[in-house]
Structures are given as structure tokens and as C-alpha cells.
Length: 94
Picture 1 (cartoon, helix red, strand yellow):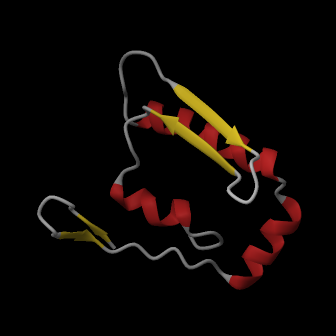
Picture 2 (tube, rainbow, N blue to C red; picture 1 turned 30 degrees about the horizontal axis):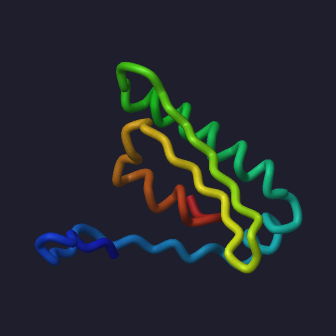
């Protein structure tokens, strides 16, 4: 669920619970670099689907400082349409 922070309104529900078997398999076959490449590939697809004009910008930031290591990807592809959001974050479910 996402809430509008200004109004406190519920905008929509989002369920991102993966199928257990798919999650186990993904951990074995998808190294971190491949996952990052897949995300960036999705950004290009999203930019095209949204028919955005201008320049596409993708920024990848990496921190290896333990225990707060992270990879952050920011981009301006125009956002994910609501109907594509749940399948995007819900591994192993169509």
C-alpha cells in the first residue's frame, strides 16, 4: 500500500510476495551484476513505452560500506504504469 504523504490517502494496494520456489531459484541463477543489468534494461523499455522525449538519464550509485552497503539506481524513464508495477516487484508471479 502506498499513501499520499500530503493527504494521507491510500492510493492503491501492492502485493510483492514472491513464489517460494522461484525466489530460491533466482538466488542461485541471478548474480547481482545480472540483476542490475536487468533493471537498467527495464528502464530502456519503460522509457520507450512511455514515449518520453528528451534525454534518458540513468545514475547508478554503489556503496560497499558495511553494514549499510547498497546499489541505488535513479532514472527519468517516466515511471511504471500501475498495471505493470506488481508483476515488476513480485518475483515468479505473472
